[in-house]
Amino acid sequence: MLLIENRAEADAVPSERLALGFEARCKSRLRTRLESGEEVGLFLARGSVLRGGDRLAGKDGRIVLVVAVAEALMEASADDPQQLARAAYHLGNRHVAVEIGQGWLRFAADHVLGDMVAGLGLPVAELVAPFEPESGAYGHHGGHGASTQPSPRIHDHYANAAP
Image: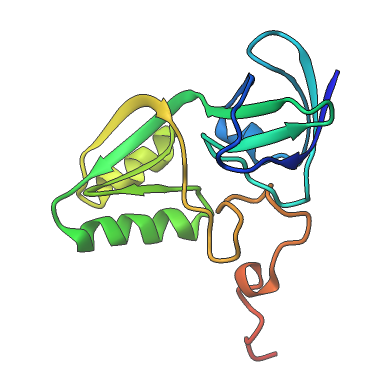
């Protein structure tokens, strides 16, 4: 089994490819397989999120290219930035990972979320594409699995509430 504990330089030339969906790319400890079928064990720093194009250094010196695989997503689009901001706010309020592009938002396919965004007046389409959501204000993705310690600034909604 190939062991990986560190990232490689961005310009390192890869000899292997590791194709993963977003949720798997959020795990710092993972047993999986390279595209060649060889088993690999990831032991990265806690809170690490891998992005498509990242390079990893195998213990044996090989360089592994991370590939973001296509996933089932939903895309909401609008010409009005305020409409997109409202949809992003409501998705973020539900701790949903969101990818933001020019005139669109993407999130993991979920009919309930799709209906919510459509209810805000945005057309929602289903698609299959690599998912690269925002990393968040504290460097990890917007969902709950990126860190073992949730930030009280993010998650304690009642910290300043009167007794």
